[in-house]
Each structure stands twice: as structure tokens, then as C-alpha cells.
Image (cartoon, rainbow, N blue to C red; front, side, top):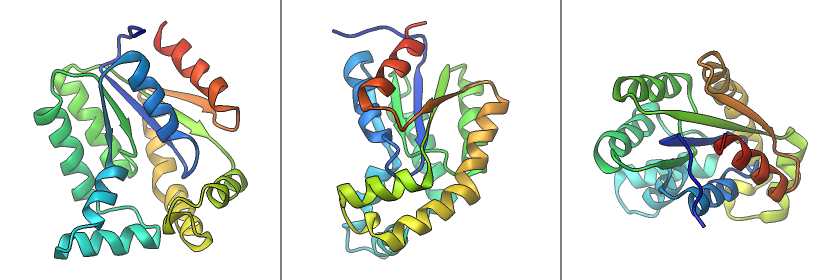
Length: 190
């Protein structure tokens, strides 16, 4: 059963292992639309034997955020070319402040409604969840620490930018996935 919501773009933000991917899939399955993840695009690019792919792989495995111009290009292309008329559930976008500002500017210019869910978890929860899932090298302790550093340096500022725009909803990401989903769905159906 698909539910309805007024938002054309729904963004899941948070630290590594905060549940963004899990919730993005749940939102897509219940509200419809397309799932867009810069994280997935990074993993795809990292598997190519090009100069770009090799550079992205090094950054990804080291726990670094991708260059702003790459993230912004992919995100802009998704909004104005690929999914202009579709609902898009964004995961792993607008991680740097300039990307967040661009995301907001594009939505304002296109008169496209959006909401950002910030899944809040502690750094210790990130470490525990990453160790438990051990998805790939990104979940290694060294990479997790670098990704936490990148979050605190950049993404925390993006979160605050969206807060100043009145588009941010904080969710306790330490709750069970079902409880987090319930809070997100309840907001989207308002």
C-alpha cells in the first residue's frame, strides 16, 4: 500500500550506520518514488578502472567525503535531468555545507518541496553498528573514525543549514528501525 505525502524530495541524513539506507528503502517502498544515493554512486564508480574510479575508490576506502563538485554534479543532474517529475528519496547527499545550500537553492528555484530527516546517533553507536555489520572496508575502525571526523567537520554544518531553513526533522536514530520508520512516516503523512 502506497501512502501519500506532500514532499517531492525526502532526504535521509546522519552519521555512518545511522540507518539512512534502511529508512530510505522503507520510505520508497511506502510512498513511492526513486531512491537516489551518492553512496551507491561512489561504490559503483570505485569499481571502475578509470582514473576517476581509482581516485574515488581511494577516497571511499579512506573514509573521506567525495569532492564537492562531484557530489553537487550528481545531485543536480538527478534533480533537473533524471528525476525532475518524480518523488526522490535521497540518501547520502548534501554532506558538505555548499552542497546543502545548492540543494536548497535548486529546490527553491524549481518550487520543489523537500524535507530532511536527521537520524541522530552517538559516535559510540556508530562504532558498534559498523563493527556489527562489517559491510566493507568503510566499516573498518580506521575508516569509521575518519568518516566520523568528516561528519563533524562538514555534515554537522549541513544539518544546521537545513535547520535554519525550517526543513529539518530530528529523529532519534538509536531507536529500533520500526520506531524510526513510524516517526518518519507519521511526519510525512501530516
